[in-house]
Each structure stands twice: as structure tokens, then as C-alpha cells.
Length: 194
Image (cartoon, rainbow, N blue to C red):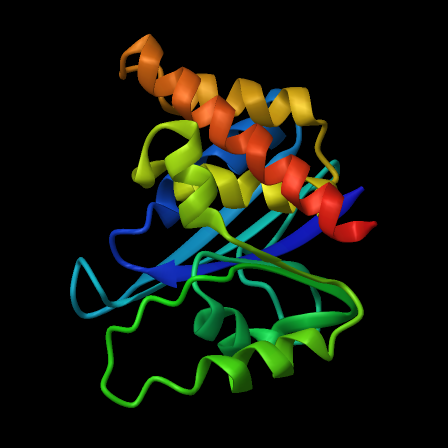
């Protein structure tokens, strides 16, 4: 079993915590995990992406080749569109529906959405609303993790355990908020599939 992921967003959206949770979940199952990340010019607002690969066999490169990503999990719709060429033919895109308009020439929302909707496997998730419902706007990344969970070859319980591990230094309330956010994202993704 192996899976190639592209995680995308902009600085400040919690993409690296998202990658850490997936990596921890895979490691807890004795998987080989490699990750490479690129940060934008600015810590907040710059492009951030992570290549994350896990497998039950050794992996020799952290980078996902174009056309081989099983999942593009994006915290921002234009970033999802940017990484569409990375998708394998049967790959999926799961993206936050709410744009982070940090550039003056951000494309029209309808154009971005239309391009992504051309793919047979896609989900648009209103992560900001769901994160607020969970109790913290900052938990939108965990909403998106939950939304991407149906496409991951990792058990939901391993992902929840990864949340516990990554946020272990935080309060119980923070961990519970992130677990609620994960569950809301998972339910929204499952509902969008029906």
C-alpha cells in the first residue's frame, strides 16, 4: 500500500500541522513516511505546499511526480487548481471552498470552482463555517483533514490519534476542538459524496 499526497495552502492556514497529523497517523501504522515542504516568501500569506508520501515499503524520494498524486488536499481553492496537474488519472481534489485572496489578480471564484468540478473526484468543503461550529476558526485545517479522510488509505482512528499526538502540548479543549473539526469535515465529505 502506498499513497502520494499534495497538501496546499497559504502561510498561516495550518498546513504543516495538517501534514504532521497525517505523517503521525501513517507512522503509527509502521508505514514509511517522507515529506518535503515549500514555504512561500512570506511566513503568512505566501504559498505553502507539502509533498507527503507513505507506504508499507521503503520510499526513495519525498517528491510526488506530476501525474501521480492520489490526493490534492488544499486549504484554499486556487491552490487546489494550481496543483491539478499533479493528480493521478483517478486522483481526487478536496479543497476548502473559501478563498484566501492575498493577491490582486486572484482569479474569479466561479472560474476556479468550474475547473475543479470538471474532475470526477472532488469535494468543496466550507471549512471556515465548520471550524467555527467546532469552536475555533484555526481548526479549519482539521476540518479539511476530516474531509480528505475518505480518500486516505489510513483509518480514521489513526488520524484522530495523530491529532492527539500533534496537539499533545496544547490543552484538552484544543485537542477536543480539533477532533470536533475533523469529525465535521468527515461528515461533510461523506454527505457530498451522496
